[in-house]
Image (cartoon, rainbow, N blue to C red; front, side):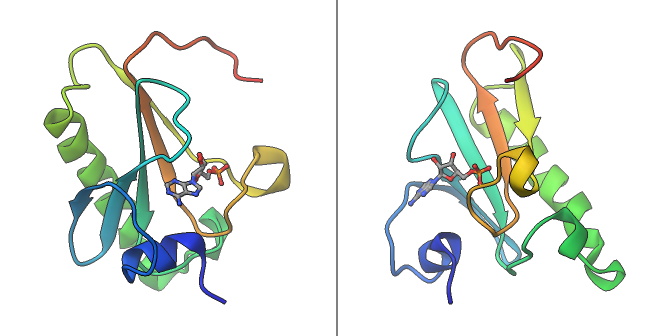
Length: 113
Ligand code: AMP
């Protein structure tokens, strides 16, 4: 079964796309927890971090190079932002398709709940 993100990638569900290339898509989170909240999603579906095989390990460097581009594009560079992967049940992951949150636009507290 397709994940919500695969449906967005395949244009079966609409989303506000802020970046896309051959390997990755980035969208605005539908339920933002801060003034700027984006998701960076590999187009290939990995359930979580540990589902990425050694053959595909380059996807992590690509995801982070995309984050570098997005934070410049969205003017998050100067004030700062947080990058989060909720991984698995205890990590609070709700969609079983690996994705990275970029959260910015306000000062964030630590530790998270
Ligand atoms: P996580 O809890 O880390 O699995 O994050 C899933 C995120 O996906 C949440 O922040 C949701 O608000 C977001 N989300 C769910 N459905 C959509 C959608 N259709 N478009 C954009 N973001 C979504």
